[in-house]
Length: 247
Image 1 (cartoon, rainbow, N blue to C red):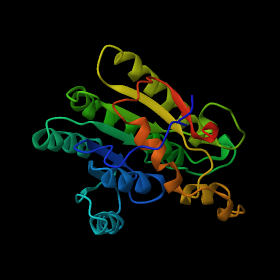
Image 2: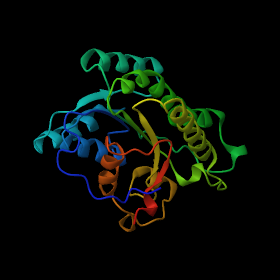
Image 3: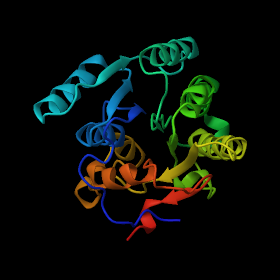
């Protein structure tokens, strides 16, 4: 499965309500900005208030609707529940969820990983996304074309030595999303996974400190694909979309 269709038209997300996690930097930032420029009402979620405000300044300077900023730690499930309740009170529905926030942790032998580090990776990459599903599933079902997209990695389905908790967490995320997709078969909600591949992000730099970032695509290079994958016209469900094969 690839996302090699034509680029989306301007205003492709007009009026859509979208939540994007990990929105303060990297792919999440690029996607949140692009969604806003396409006319969506974007709820940008990240831990860092200042970085979210910088993004909002860019969005407003470009003439788009101001973002709704949620500066919270997604490992606090009660705060996710409160966000869901607030979205219901304000909009009564959710059209798009992009689960992008992630944590690499420490690479190395599994037996050498501190238990608290393993748990933190699982909390961010798996449990937080489950809490998002739990809180936002009812809102997505209220949309005429609810779409959810979760960012994964090639290490989630191809075992590589020393990728430890991160690889395990992505494998768990992929199965969780596929189970949720199976539960949504008779609804208007479409749920998929996306593997962006090699991208110029801070996490990539942490994983490959010797790599020249100039050889990697910028996060903005994926924005068209994300708009396409959450479009009401996109009918794939329970799929893993590999952007490295998009051509």
